[in-house]
Image 1 (cartoon, rainbow, N blue to C red):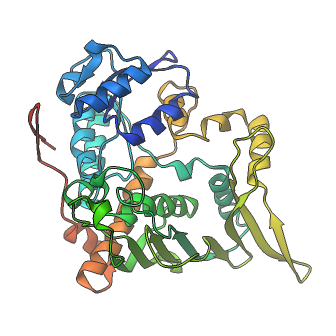
Image 2 (image 1 turned 60 degrees about the vertical axis):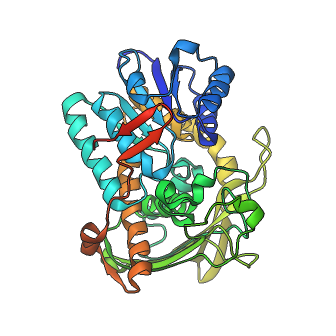
Image 3 (image 1 turned 90 degrees about the vertical axis):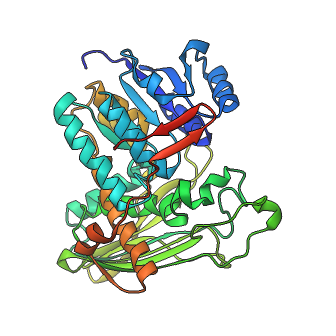
Length: 401
């Protein structure tokens, strides 16, 4: 792609699509030219906001994919529609950027990945998964410390995410599809947990999984008024313990709801040092919220040393010294820059997301079967849950993937 313009269409114009649009605001060469959603009022409100003309608004994604002037499509739908629609996008010869998680099961994530391999060879299309935690100075610095050997032999990681009581569609004002098993597939593990798992797997170099144990719970009674006649069908708490090749172990916990104020810190432990994932206070000229940062713990001359890595402040310096990093702080900016050849590398979010799906699936399968799961069992036991048919007021969509 020789020029710096990228013409994009959207499938799905719900809440998350607005966050994607904010990401594209830093990429002036991105031109969003069409959008599709089966909820016509939501589609029209979205298109009115972003200046999409009437003749570029679709309720049938297939019609939008027929357009030759669209080079890439951003898929912003719920989990069990990610694979069918992403495969359709790539089959149409268009680059695909898909909202996380990659899919609601490893089997479906693998189907999407295999489709990318096929259509990449046929028509050079690319696939990316929205994975915001990868695009943080915290992540880059932690990975550099690991890769350079500053932590020595890394043998343990603790990965946590905590909400005391904030289940999407219940305590937060989002779609009830978040806890509908047919559409979402799973809950806290695949909604927020994948962010933290993906970040850690990327930092640690995508280690090969050996085995995993996990448990998932849905124990806190939801308010009938908030349920509005719906049934809460997914987990609100997930935890797991995984072992990888080389002796690395990882402990994981993710909560949408738990009667506890804190559940600990995310950290990496090595033979020469450890890093704890923290937050810096807001920096001058930066948005008014804390910046993900790191504390380094090590020893020097026989003394314990604690070092604040100041990721927020150092990100400004990093961008001055290495201008390419401005393309590494934002999912959409990175995607755009890679497709338009402004950078000659791309973080492999599709590969990171696939390995994240493998570990996540292992946790879920272990909970369901009440036993430890070996890595080679995941391919066999993971079953597809992606939607094959969707009935809408605009007709019935039969998905082929």
